[in-house]
Length: 275
Ligand code: TA6
Image 1 (cartoon, rainbow, N blue to C red):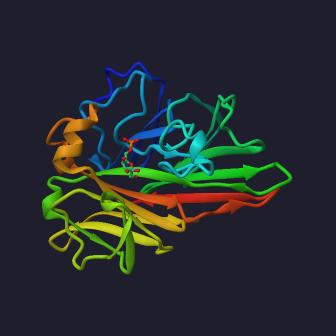
Image 2: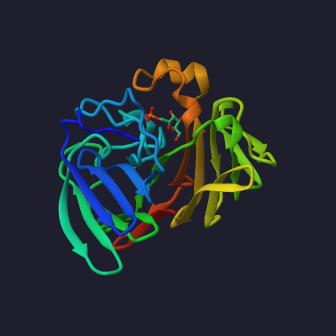
Image 3: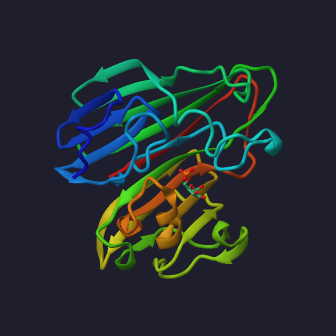
């Protein structure tokens, strides 16, 4: 079980029936989601929990660009956008019989790379049997704004070499091998680095071991799903992940990576539900 007692970050804890989650206001980052006491998310034992860098594990929010997909690569400064390494504020909290939710928004929009008129809110909702995170993007400008983003969830597994990913098919871009297009393997197993963008709107994936489902993940508002595991060599080089921890995680990321633009006056919701 993840222990965040050493964290110097402001944390918010939500409980609803059998569901329990811990959110860091640094990055609006869900650190833990437990269902009936069972942890669904991975956070590295070497993760920095002092605000000095984005947190390794949980659910990082990548926005308003994913990875290196800044519309003007020459301006690119940091991977995965501007909001995973800043404090977010609490805009609203709701508790009803059906759900408990919190709405958060980033506090620092001063970066010259922040697209003018674009804003974000994250709504984290717990019900008795699931966690939903909904990333809302709003364009109050008079022109459309290129947008890429991801809910970069790290799921905990006992041993990644013994699990199977379900729900994906067709072609993907293999970013571990220069983005070359390949066919999704069947069954989808893990025995080496994976850094894959699947251009798909499939609404559901799951991780299973033998025929037992470990976690089910629902997706909406996406044009792609990203699957990532750094494997031994890259894991060892990361600096905020212990050498063998790649065996204990798999990222399944609900994402917009295919050249989406948010029209003037419009909003968009990217959502992932974990159950
Ligand atoms: O989503 C996959 C990815 O973009 C990989 O290329 C990998 O670098 C990973 O995210 C983690 O990125 P980070 O900046 O958190 O080290």
